[in-house]
Image (tube, rainbow, N blue to C red; front, side, top):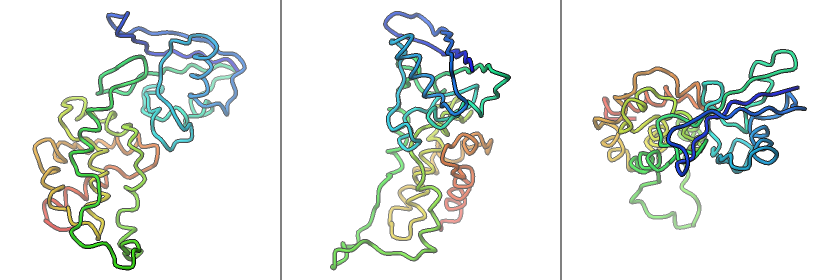
Length: 240
């Protein structure tokens, strides 16, 4: 199969504005991933192509990008899922939106992680460590309450697919809310009020317009919009 990739390129040292590079690959297989194709372009055709990737197994979340207009992990996106026509396929690849582009497909993730840190994404309690040194136990029901939001890998696919975030990057974004949800609904944690104060702020959960882009973009199939709704309910009711 032949694949033609149209890639959004930008080098701040040499380019005044972004441009499109087009590359053709032969002997492409339906089971190849978009990351496989990007590797081939970088290793065989243009070593200046710059992208961020690590584990290549959908765990690290580092290779989130826009593929044919939708956010996805390049390592989890198979060629066969992109609308192959006969023995040819065309693929468009761009950096995720809403974050400053550093070079080609790499964006500056610091604004994203600033929002992540703002929700206090760590366990908070004044209770002493169990005397026997074991973990802090909880029931299976209590654990299941926040099981879905523990799956987040901080790839930013959800946040960078959100029109509210595109419109105003002060919006804390879906990923940060998902991380807060994981601790707000943990029966062992005591930092709920502090987190809900952050999330109830002007640029917190109320900026969400329930568009569902975030849920569709999540490579871990987290019900992001549902988690945001539950956080809204916790703010208004004062309880979880």
